[in-house]
Amino acid sequence: MSKADLFERRRRVMMPCYGHFYGSEPLELVRGRGTRVWDAAGKEYFDFFTGVAVNSLGHCHPEVVEAVARQLETLQHTTTLYLHESVVGLAETLARLAPTGLSRVFFCADGSGANEGALLAASAATGRRNFIAFDRGLHGRTALTMEVTGIGFWKNDSFPMARAHHVPTPMDEEGAEESLGAVERLLNSPAGEEIAAFIAEPILGNGGIVVPPHGYFRRLKALLRAHGVLLIADEVQTGFCRTGAWFGMQRHGVSPDLMSCAKALGNGLPVAVWLATEEVAAAYTRPAASTFGGNLAAMAAAATVVGIMERDGLAHIAEVRGSRFRALLAGALSGFGEVAEVRGMGMMIGVEIGGPGNAAMADCDRVLCALRDRGILAGKTGPGRNVLTFLPPLTATEEEIGFAAEATREAFAATRGSSARC
Ligand SMILES: Cc1ncc(COP(=O)(O)O)c(C=O)c1O
Image 1: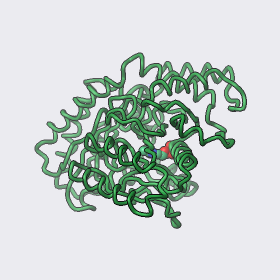
Image 2: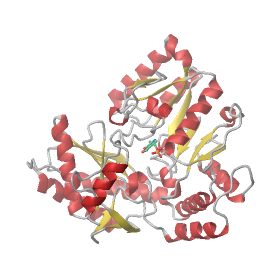
Image 3: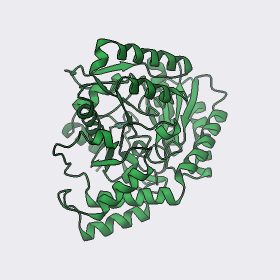
Image 4: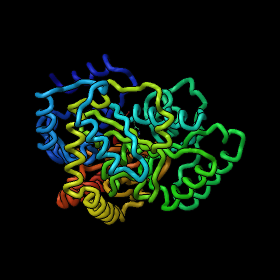
């Protein structure tokens, strides 16, 4: 069957909300190993997008595959109504690695579910129902997580529940002051008394790889605490070594009251988790469980992933290699005036393309296609879909990041001044 047939079948049967990269030439991937993936025609690529920060150990990591296969042959699924050592053991490991104080664990199956749980627990703990979030944040696809999502591109709700206040995303020092000022005014207003929590990504992923200035979250946490408001770290994208620490908030030197994680935890198996302090957990006592939260194959994957990350020191590697990749990209793109900024932290890197909205978005699309032609898969993020985004495996080698940086230079050069559609 041709790719065009498959594309057409997908268009007919799947919800119209689904998007895809590469315009009229969507990519059909059929195989992966380590940093590499192959399409249906046999062409090889370096996957520098990892299914949006999921395959942090690369594709089909042999130790993860073996652990999952062994578990599938032993016992695939039970329920948290029964005991299983792997569920308790993983919870203990996560509580040990998490920012200080996050000692209680709830497993579920995706990032939206983890955030939904954290938001609900924050409401239960404070007796308040509303939230604050960044205007460029993304927190999920369910009704409440979409409510707190700020970025317009991903808002797909005709009847918002008006439970979220959005404040400016701190893009730089000046923006940080503006953002904290907005939070303070809100907390001091009558609406402030109804705020349960502020939910924030430590580094905004879909918002265009935005790193809030150092010190922002410390000041935010102090402000929130003074008003009895909790801080939820959405670490769905930043968790598990991607930013150069186990969790992104650790790079900001802050311990949140709740934290949600998903994506890289299973390296491709669906597993998610949210954690909270004893104090918050004490209010979360009504019966709750998630059918697939604690699924044994997912637990086997997650325990193996975390074990490998710890054994191989991947947080440190992500920091070193990510800094190097950022520097290589900045050097390779220094002659291109259309590049507004190369930014990020660890192995979470964005190249913002400047210019008027639609033109910048089209430029980003052309570079994305040119990169694909050169054997590199990247992504695009940002409110204007104009931030070329790299989320490589943390295991990518020095040679691979060097190749990707050079391919990016070539892609910008090849598409310069072009108006071709991609
Ligand atoms: C920061 C963040 N939070 C939440 C989500 C939603 O996660 P999921 O798609 O697993 O529900 C995403 C997905 O990209 C994300 O990047």
